[in-house]
Image 1 (cartoon, rainbow, N blue to C red):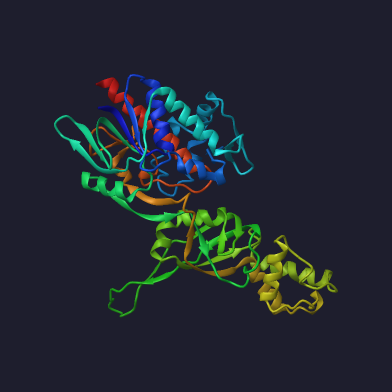
Image 2 (cartoon, rainbow, N blue to C red):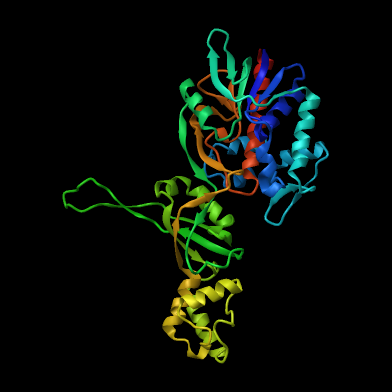
Length: 427
C-alpha cells in the first residue's frame, strides 16, 4: 500500500511529492501519470523556456491575476508565495531571472532545467513514478478511510490521495460521483479570430493598446405588462497591454487577459462578439482630432500615408489611413475634416467583430473544476471526503499569462503536501 498516491504527473503533483518526501522520508509515495511523459506542460510552457513564476511578491497584488480564485488564494499566498518558489529553485542550484514584464524564467532559458530538477529530486527521494497509468476509477473505502485507485494496468491502495490532474473531464466526472461539485469547464486564455482588411496582411505587428468588449444587449423572453422586452447589459471588460496581430486575428497579453477574465461571458456569446481597440490608449478621440488638425497645418505639403503622425506601427497606420478613404497621394493640406474625424475614430475607437477563438493546445488553460467552496484552503483538503487533497488546475482556479498559473501550482502543491504531512503526524 502507498502512503500517498498523487494522480497527475504535472507541476503541482511533482512539487507536492518532493515536499512530502523531504519532510517524511519513511512514506511510500507514488505518482500516477496517464501518458508516456511526465511534466509535459512544463516542457512547452513559455515557448519551451518555462515561465516559472512572476516577480510579484505582495500576496494581495498577486491574487489580482486570478479570474477564478482571487479571494481564496489570498491566505495560501501569505503562506507560500513567489519568493518561496524562487528560494526552492535556488536551494537546488537553479537561478531564475526576471524579465522586464515581471515574468521569471530559469537563467538557462530551458524548461528542461526545471524538468531535470524535479526528476532528480523525486529519484533521490524514492518517489515512484508510474507512467502509462490512466485512472479509470477512484473508490473511497469507508471502513478504513483508505483509497483504492484503479488504472488501466493495476489497482493501487493508498492512505492519502492527492489529485493534481489539471483540466481532466474524466477525473472531474469521477469526482462528481464521489460527491464533489464540478463547475462546468470553459476555455480560458485564447486568441480572437478576426477577418478584417485593417489587419489583413500585417501579421507580426505588435503595439500597446486598450481593448474592450462591447456590451451585448440581451432581451428577456418574459413578457412584461408594457409588452416591452427588458434590456440586460453584460458587464464591460477592458484591458490594456501588448496586442499582437496574427494571421488569424489578434493575440498578445491584452487579448489573453480579456479571454481569461471574460471566459464565461465569451462562452455564453458563443465566441461571437465585438471589441473596440484604442491604438493610442493614452488619448481619447477628441484629443486626437485636435492633434491631427495641427498636423494638417504643420505638415501640409506631405502625404498623409507617408507621414505617420502618431505612435503606432507603420503598417497599421497605412491600413487605417486607407480605411478612411485617404489615398496614397493625398496631402495633409487636402485631407477633409470628415476624413480626419474618421482617422481619429480608427485610432481610438476601432471596432472589430470577433468570430471564434484559437487555443494553444499544449498550453491550454480551462476555467472550471472542483468548486472552491468544497476546499479547505489551509490544507487543500476536501471538506467532503477524508484523506482527499487537491492541487493545481483541477480546482476552479486559473490565471492570466505571466507565470501565475505555475505559481498557483507551486503554492497549492506545497500546502497540500503540508496538509498531508500534518495528518500523518496526527496519526
